[in-house]
Amino acid sequence: MTKKFPFLMIPGPVQVREENLKVMATPVIGHRTKMMADLFLETASLMQQLLFTENQIFFIPGSASAFMEAAIINLVKKSVLNVVNGAFGERWHQMAKNWNKEADKLEVTWGHAVDPQVLREKLEEKEYEAVTITHNETSTGVTTPLEKLAPIFSDFDTLVLVDAVSSAGGIPLKMDDWGIDMVIFGTQKCLALPPGLGIAAVSERALEKARKIPYKGWFLNFELLEKYAKKGYNPATPSVSHMFALNHQLKYIIKKEGITERFIRHETLGKQTREWAKKYFDLFAQEEVASNTVTTIKNTKDLDLDSVKKDLLERGYLFATGYGPLSKTTFRIGHMGDLTEEQLKTYLATLEKVMNL
Ligand SMILES: *Cc1c(COP(=O)(O)O)cnc(C)c1O
Image 1 (cartoon, helix red, strand yellow):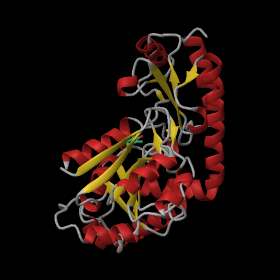
Image 2 (spheres, rainbow, N blue to C red; image 1 turned 30 degrees about the horizontal axis):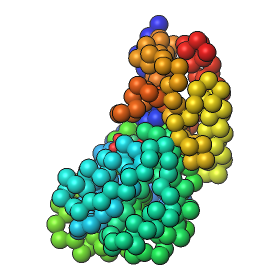
Image 3 (spheres, rainbow, N blue to C red; image 1 turned 45 degrees about the vertical axis):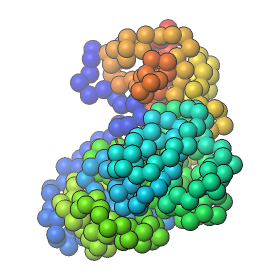
Image 4 (cartoon, rainbow, N blue to C red; image 1 turned 180 degrees about the vertical axis):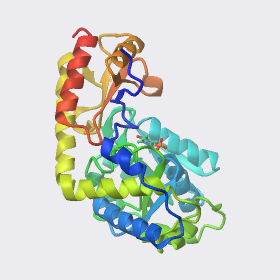
């Protein structure tokens, strides 16, 4: 029996707990009220705790891609280096090119993370205003160990911009300790909320840079966003419902589950999935950089993934094939957000049945 609303095992958007769906239905409040400002400022301060930062937090209605584009508009006048080890790194490179920037690509074999020495040499070769890096490549299932790159970041003036869309809130990300200038994500991945809100943390150094960029539009303009955010507002109308849900979920993460415990749970889910994947198939990612939020699995048995997807839908699950060029040769298991070990186990057992393993 096909379920109208299958359980989401895709790497975003992920399954939202009933409790958070209910919070999304909180009555709408005026966006220029004290209640709104209090909600915004408290949520921003909780967000700082999650990212281990004291930097400015921005929220905008839209998806994470809006902030990826905003980073290019506000922080790059001319030159940017895009580290590309998968489809999302490539997206950021395309954005930079579409904005007519001098965008150089540091191409890394898919399934690998950038070699720190190679990155260092690239930054020594040419002076870049900014470097973009994907913390967790959702297409390949690779986590780039940013803590190992931190010593490089501190040796250059280059702004460090990080796509943390499928890592923030699931994998440790110490923005201030690691010298990151911008962290970008959304509500629909590790935070396990409905899609529709973009989130960013921006360093003072980056905000200063933005002040020197003359043309940066209006909706994604950091100067304007900062002016309003300091008071707890957005220049335009914020997604009030998302702000209520985000506030609620951050309190749950910080006070109920615990940030460290959340990271440990993701580690366990990652290990569980990798063990399963190695037993029946193969990992697409190099194991030492394999992600704890999403696993990309080589389709070594040459299964018809569309038919697998159909069978799983009948059992109440939404299955993820590979991303873009990897759509037939790999499939993915999203294990981020509020997913429990029990839920993952049940899913893996269902996969075994459907795939005749
Ligand atoms: C999902 C994802 C994006 C795109 O995010 P949207 O919210 O859909 O704009 C970008 N980068 C990575 C790594 C992602 O996983």
